[in-house]
Length: 266
Ligand SMILES: NC(=O)c1ccc[n+]([C@@H]2O[C@H](COP(=O)([O-])OP(=O)(O)OC[C@H]3O[C@@H](n4cnc5c(N)ncnc54)[C@H](OP(=O)(O)O)[C@@H]3O)[C@@H](O)[C@H]2O)c1
Image (tube, rainbow, N blue to C red; front, side, top):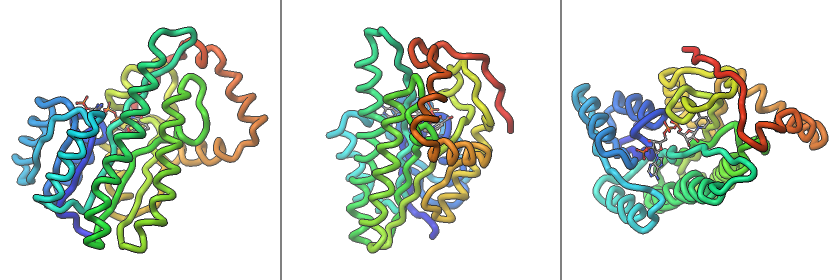
């Protein structure tokens, strides 16, 4: 399928930005959403300079009414056939803390609620037209409850489960669903981490892998391959083994204290 109208949330930096640059080469019109106006405008100029077509929509997507209205107006003017719910945040929890409620609310509103609203709003037109592709950017962190990342892991596990179930409803209407579960990628999201990030890859390589998975309409895509193996093992460990593994990161789970950072590989 060649996509004509593409919506990407979280397009101002990291994976969303890289996906926008990848899809710009295919000739479709890009509708780019994030809060940072300047970063979005810069990306639009970059895409236009390369002969592509893109529009910037600076908005906080946790403001549900405004966000839904925006998505509907985009879909009305330029029927969307690829929606990528990518915006996300990975705030950490620590104990005791005064900020855990705020962190939890932001992650739940952004990674789960806004992500689902993105796809549900745009699914309507796609199933009516019997054409479209819904993509969610989840995470390997959703495979098990990770120490120190209770809300983040839960938001991604919930999103992955949503995507799996969604496919049963939309596939009969020829609307495809892809669940992308990245391992570590060097982006502004991970730049602040001070713990080891095994098998970390560059955003350029990640964008390329994600682009290929989407155009191949993969149902699920976990990357890099080393993390796909680790994730599959993690996922299938019995509870008592996972409980033991988590205990090894007790300090991280309580205070967020981490080890040394690793540098990105290209
Ligand atoms: N990097 C990794 O290692 C990794 C691993 C697994 C999964 N992921 C997932 O991949 C996705 C992209 O992450 P990334 O690494 O590319 O992070 P990133 O560079 O921090 O990008 C996050 C994007 O979300 C946007 N965003 C944040 N809050 C928003 C809001 N309230 N309204 C609208 N847009 C908002 C940000 O733009 P503004 O700040 O301009 O709004 C930015 O464009 C996330 O869902 C993340 O959980 C990343």
